[in-house]
Image 1 (cartoon, rainbow, N blue to C red):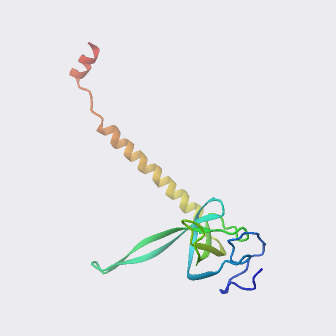
Image 2 (cartoon, helix red, strand yellow; image 1 turned 120 degrees about the vertical axis):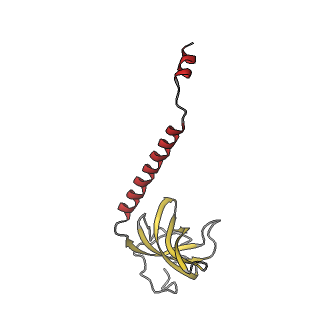
Image 3 (cartoon, rainbow, N blue to C red; image 1 turned 90 degrees about the horizontal axis):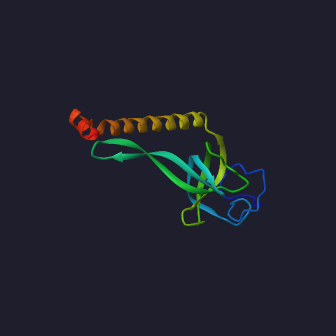
Length: 151
């Protein structure tokens, strides 16, 4: 186990045999460091991390909220789950889409599950509105159309 990865972080208590772990292999971390929320942990040793940022709109002299979402390597010793707040750092390319690795698990985000359930419920309502519009767009049969159907 390395004595340090060059950043003051809490070291994982578990040991792992992952070749892409910054603590238990020779993977060096450098460059940008971000803190975000794990929104998906369905892939093997990979999590999707998302965080909010502000982008300036010079025309309106205002800022807008935007989100950044990237794939990150999740070492076995850290084992971040969906809803966890994690600290990630840049490293060499680990695959076609992964250039970051989780270096610290900061704990679970309070209210994450409630927020995801509310988001899912709002999507269901939008679908029902679309169905209503489709139903209203169907032509209504007149008396003449009904007579033609009977013949």
